[in-house]
Amino acid sequence: MDPARILVRGVNWLGDAVMTTPALLRLRERFPAAHVSLLTPEKLSDLWRRHPAVDEVLTFAAGESVFSVSRRLRQGGFTHALVLPNSPRSALEVFLAGIPYRIGYARPWRNWLLTRRVAPRPGRVIMRKRTAAEIQRLLAGPPPKVTPEPPLPPEAHQIYEYLHLVAALGADSQPLAPLVQAPAPADTVLAALLPVGGRRAAVFIGLNPGAEYGPAKRWPVESFAAAANELYRRLDCEFLIFGGPGDVALAEQLRGLLPGPLARGHVTSLAGKTRLGELMSALPACRVLITNDTGPMHLAAALGVPVVVPFGSTSPELTGPGRPGDPAHRLIKSDVPCAPCFLRECPVDFRCLRGLSAERVVAAVLEVVAS
Image (cartoon, rainbow, N blue to C red; front, side, top):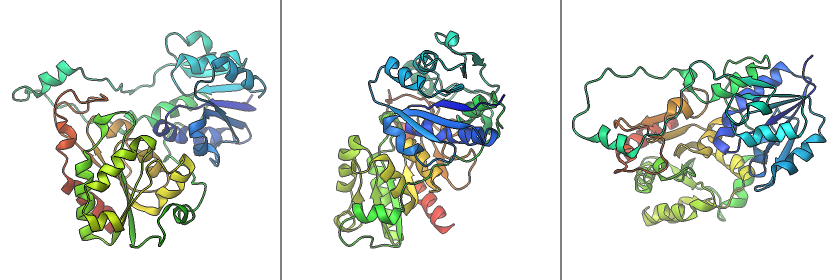
């Protein structure tokens, strides 16, 4: 019998949540008549309010207990629960809610909470963090003569992890492009956020210099400034700086590195000024977004905005934007031997991202604009 009421326990981070959308679209395709509810942290609720794969959004507050969440879920009459995170807590929530069928990845400390434990998929690649000692060895002296590792296949990407889970319910596991829907037109939102006088240039270029995971993901702010200055010289453009409350100082640092006429007349910082829904509506105003590997990167790509991304400590093959291999985006990789390390902070000299020049990013942006 097909599921009548499905609860999907969503993931907790913006970028990961965007990468789950192909799986939810496949779930909706497989069970068009089912009522699908998505349980998500309150901070991500705007992502799902208008999503075509979701009938109902349920939220929980930061710090809310597992018992409080499960009590509320009991009232939903759910027949099936699909648990996307790998945490024990997420499985415990649906177990205590008494949902009869509970599907998720097999993991220690939670297998007994699930009625169907899905084995790791073939081709899964684990993002193993390098140790500081390993990085030092890789950087010491000439590189060892070894056979290069073959490139990772598209199936290594994180979106396949979620597609493999919905395939356990009979859904198609072939990828779709991540998809989200903005709650309002970009012009409407920008009219409230931009200074009096509105836009003055033909093209908006977005700048996203932050990264919540840690500084190892952040292309130097000086490089953002150098790229913006060169693009301003070559294009009729102005810039929107994006970021959360923790990025306000970084955004102001970026503005301070720009020449006075550019900073005063053609740069608007929206850092700390947009809730998630407003960010979703403002991003499509940009012809292209220069961004680190972070949540707004995934969000922009899912909204149809091309992104240019310097990658250092992380891997575009595993967590790149959009559908794997999407030619709309420009992913600029470091070739230093210690990258990707998957660390929050660089234990050496940050050469992976310092070595990616502003010129390379500018060239990539000009390609996108020309196309």
